[in-house]
Length: 318
Image 1 (tube, rainbow, N blue to C red):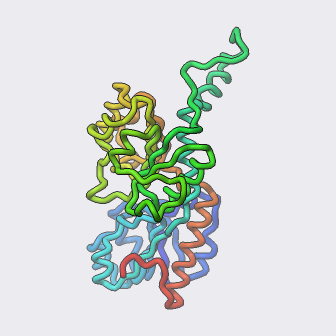
Image 2 (cartoon, rainbow, N blue to C red):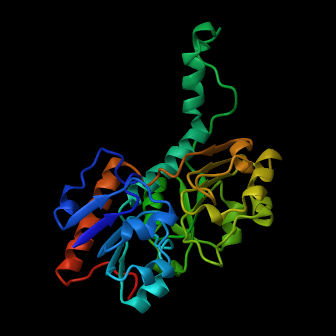
Image 3 (cartoon, rainbow, N blue to C red):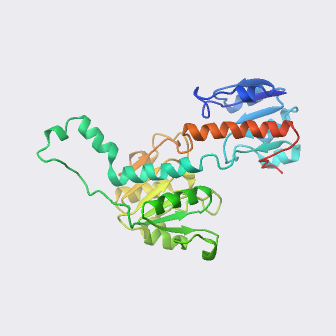
C-alpha cells in the first residue's frame, strides 16, 4: 500500500515520529505540497494524508488508485466530500483531539488581555521597574475575571471545556446553544445570540463555520457589546467580519480582541486586524500543543489501521 503525506510539517515539524504510520506501507512524507504538485506526488497512491492541501474532484478522477484520504484535522473542507462519496473513497478526520488545548488558549488570550503579562515582562526586561519610584506600577486598569459574565457562541466539546475553566475562575457562564435550558448543566444560562453580545463581558466563539454563521460578528453585533467587552476567537476566522472588528477596536467600541484564527491564513499584510488597537493575534496554534499533536498522530494512525483492517472509523464521506 502506497501512503503519501502531502503536508506533514504542520503536525510534525520534527518533534514527533511518523514510525507507526510508516510501518503500514510504502511511506513518503512531504513537508508541504503546492496544489499543482498533488497529482505528481499522489501518483499511484492508495492513501493520501493531508492537513491543508486541497484535494479536488479532478484530483480524485486522475488518481485512479486512490482509496483513502486521511485529513489531519477535525475540519475536512479541504476535500471535495461529494466527489469522494461518488468515487467510493473513504475520507477520515480527527475528532476532538485538541479540545482542552483550545480551551486553554481561550484563557491564554483572555488573561493576556486582562493582566498584560507579556507587556509588563517586556517593560521590566527593558529596565522600567528598576527605575520606578514605587514598588509597583501599571499603565491601565487590570481586570479581575471573577464574577464577570462570559458568553459562549456554541456549546460543543470546546465550548464545554471553556465553560468548565470559566466556572472554576468564578465567572458566570452563558451559552448560545441548540440545547434547551433543562439539558444544560446547573449554572449554565442559555441566551440568544444578541443577548450574549449585549450583556456579556467576554464573548468567545466556538461554533462551526456555516453559511449561517459566516461573519456573525459584524458591525451591528459589535455595537451591541459593552465598551469594556472582550472578544475571543479560537474557532474559524470567517466567523468575524474583520474590517468591522478592526473599526470597532480602533474606535473603542469594544475593549480588545484575542484571535487565534483569521479568514485567510497566513494573512495578507493589509489585513486590518494586524494593526488594530488592542488586537492580539496568535498564528492558529490553539490546537498545536505537543500533547494534542500526539493525540492527532495516534488517531490518524488508528484511522488508517482500521481502514486497512476493514473496520472503518471516523469516515466523513459516508
